[in-house]
Image (cartoon, rainbow, N blue to C red; front, side, top):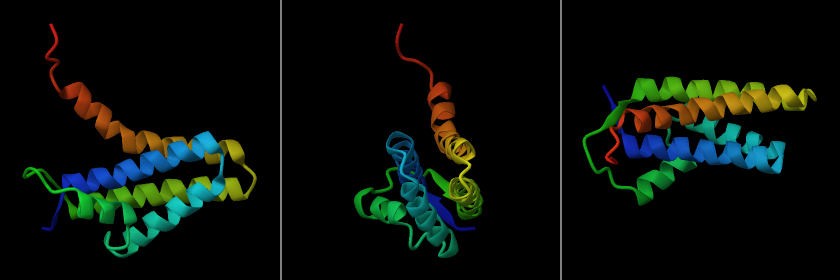
Length: 126
């Protein structure tokens, strides 16, 4: 089974989160369209054409043994593309509120693992 270093997975998640936040702040649907292209191309090529993962491979070195199964990554990327498709489709149909809801759902899906990990780490403060 193929394993992907967690640093590369987090690089992709960070790219998604920052892109969706940029969309919410600037209210520019082309940001969702660009993110859809990035994620769909990455999904279709097994991550080879994903600029977020490419940046991760270029600038990050795997520090530990923590990895994620390629199948799980593919599933999560499929969910991201589905949310982006629904968001973009809603925006194109003029259903602005639905487009934002699907974008926020994607944001929550990508950011939730970070919150879960952060809450599972014991606090070192008194």
